[in-house]
View 1 (cartoon, chains in turn blue, purple):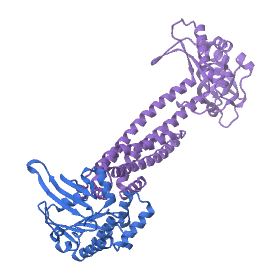
View 2 (cartoon, one colour):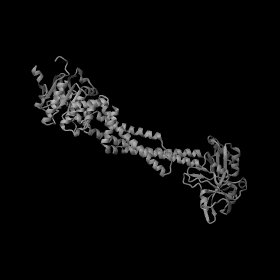
View 3 (cartoon, chains in turn brown, orange):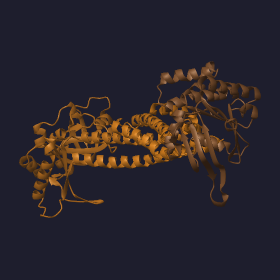
View 4 (tube, helix red, strand yellow):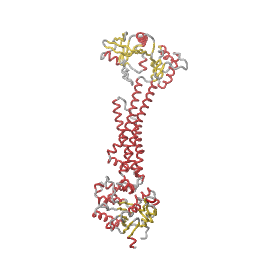
Length: 233
Length: 400
């Protein structure tokens, strides 16, 4: 791994509150993630993994330390610049799916492309293509509330894919699904990582879900407790 | 992006049709009321000015007496000589008609009618642009010698003769018997509800000698040849009458010359003020409507916090979210405005036909109403939209 990392965290801290009430959600994190990696971020609740995820996804800013995304210093970006970074380079998959409820799958997929200013015909085609990739080619005209949990999560994955991001952040993507559906979703993510070389960062607290990833990073009390990449090295 | 936000706004409104409808009701009523007020006001002005014009265009009317606030100070009547002097000395007059009026009972057979008897000359018909419908006007001889002949107003003809031909019949007016030589064409009611056709016209001298018993003239009707000369002619008449009536320099006129154009302008000003006032009251409901929109937009932003979070996460900037909600508010209020215009125009068309007023469409007011209602959307939609745009994406995504 000689190339510059896609994601580079150096001594990143996140402190909520001030003075005596201050709580450090992240107490100083160093983390490198390279192109094409499939990383599982693990840890009990309160370990700081979700905070780390929000910072990595440019939804939140660290209190201290530095975050470089493909060499760009995220800490120096404005709110709108971070929005643009999310728009062009990052895809999200959430535990609660977070689709627009009364909107069709097709339109949900087109939304990121609308913000990117993609013309209508091209949006249609790309959304259809993404639906095919997640095996829902015939469900484009169903609204989110008409789809099952597993199908909704597939649509959410398709939405993260449709804008061809550099990295996909999946925050407990199987948290609301039964075991069979969970493994289907993970198999889908695994294949996306392998066939398209999509970099995926997955947050989970389940060991068997984390096993799909190539690398496991464990958080505890705001620190990285272990990192399988470093253990191997 | 803007076209998309527009479609999105329409869909959001369609999804919440009842709420959007109730919200825009304030705007609908406000715009509708303003449009109706202005349209009806313009119609009323047009009607009144048309009525005044029907008295005779370019008309000047001289009456004795001095108008003081609230009262009319009596002054001696005019004399026939005064009208002759006006006729002789003042250029630019098409007609000068002295007139004396008094109430009298007209009797034909077993029908009678209390009416206004006006003694005047043929110039009266010219000045008032009032043609004879049947028969003829006064001959020179009848005029000069004060023959007992009369011309009937439509109402009097109808009351006394019904379906019979009145021309050539002999009627009695108080103690004087006279022959009917003509009937005036109907003029209808004046603006002030007076029946203009309820009169009987006789030669001036006949009324003076046989009914009044003096040579007074209590009104002079004059018609100016060219409208543009009205102010000059009016000033000339006033100067001449002051001279003839020996009004001392500096003293107020003991008579009044009214100019119909002036009256028209006065009426227009009055109805204009009234219209503006009523419209202002109506416009207040636009303001209330705007507050309603702001209220609903704030509720909508709270309800859709999660949606906003999703949009922010997939890369919407503050301005994208701001624009979305602002356009939603503007679309809602503009739709209300359009609905209000339709309602206001339909309502005022109905009211105009019920009140027998002309329907006067004022396109500039319609355009103004659309612009104003959209403006209300911007003004009252901005605060909720900004609140939406400034949401923290993490908080918003966590919102249930």
